[in-house]
Length: 288
Image 1 (cartoon, rainbow, N blue to C red):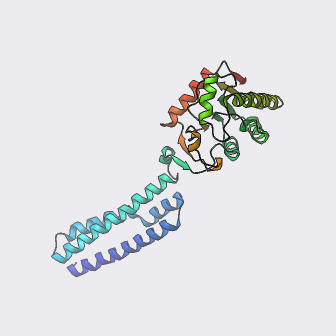
Image 2: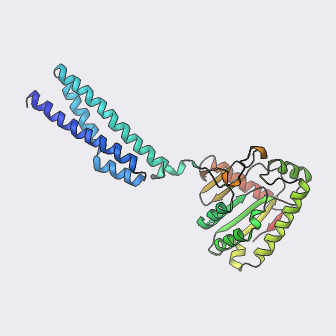
Image 3: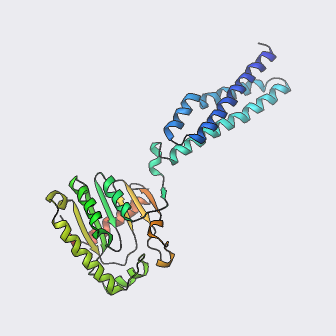
């Protein structure tokens, strides 16, 4: 094969490579799902193409100056193709398209510990739903209790940990400093906690036996320092523990992160829940 024929062949490969790179770039803009990106990579064969181009570049480097220049251009194109492949891998990990995505932190900008948040946790849970909170007002809401009853009927084990109405004045004073809106003085907070505990007991008492057996509630009596929920293998933590003036004006604007339960820092938060649950055995509101 003459040098000119070799050059024409390489130019044909370059044209094909440019077409592939263009298609990959265009498609990656319009396709957000990881399955589609994986399909693109299989169809276009970017890894094998990059390998062939590098082999051609090595051969051309042995020839005349024009061939060596062309080889350098091929090497540059190989780097561009491989960069696109790495970008596709990164997008898949971020968007949950691969098994590795289970270790990625997911950011949710709004809705932490709002009624839709509770509904999502208990409706989506398959085996368990745990809530560690400060104030129990929302749990006493009839709509949320109905959603929890439905989940408990289908076998979801629900556990609630909230500040106990039996806490000392010092604990309630500390809690009052970090409670989100509406803020209340310690004596009002104690009354709210007790009233909500009574209401929850009353409502759950009317549930079917299966549902009651899957619902537990304990009060903790230490200064509040964590605030999160767990749903099966996911921990959802917001930033309610900051001082009240630092909180968003609207509760709906509170963001949170979703963490894998079996990886740090989700694993530490899970251990914290279990230890606090054990420490709160003397302040049972409802238990199996």
